[in-house]
Length: 273
Image (cartoon, rainbow, N blue to C red; front, side, top):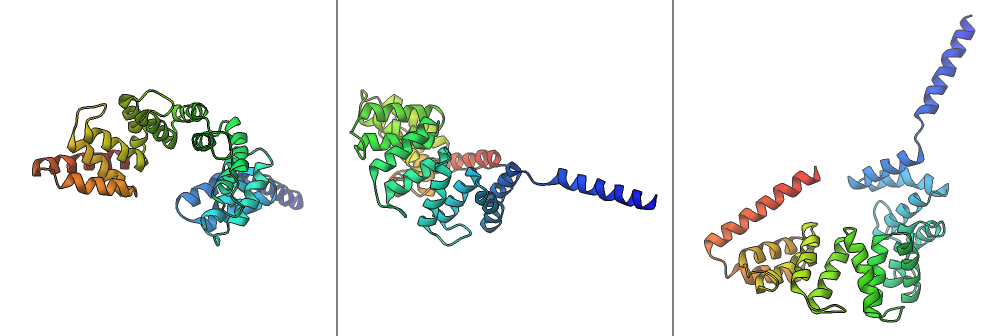
């Protein structure tokens, strides 16, 4: 009887252990949580076994680590190998990432045609980054015949799904009249959508329109506010425009900008939590 009871306890323990085993999805998410905290070595340990077993999401994530040099020595060749393995399984993110390496010549020979091919595969699977990236190639005529209307369709599709880079690109087209009638109001609206997401170039572009009174009443306070945000996000143009407009502000206007910046910081700190 004692033996049977002991055996039953072991079987129960084994059953509970099996139920608690980490699933691939949970392991992927655990790695992502570590990566978001900057613990890239822990993320790699979570993803590498899955990648070796053929999980395409983990393979793509391993490619990102090697491309950026996060938790591993930076190695674009290894990144391309991981991306290719995942892309071959139809992973849209990896297909886009492989396209980026071809476009930039990182770990692979620069080849705009192959970049466009991989972007197209990912775009057809709904990857918004790939849609935007393919749009850039169409706008520039790199690897594809130049076609501004095709670029606009791709930008708009990604922009309407919320991609800030595509929203900014669409705004530029409206501001410059590229493939569409010049329309500052439309440009302003698309820049604002991207700027609200923290896109530095769009913040600068929005500031330029507001500061020059195109599509909206001229407002140096709002312009300086957006230039300041753009500069803090790494925009060199934003820094130049911030400095230029700051010199023209009155003390009262400076205080207004400071209030806008404080409100922005508070709102976005709350959103991040």
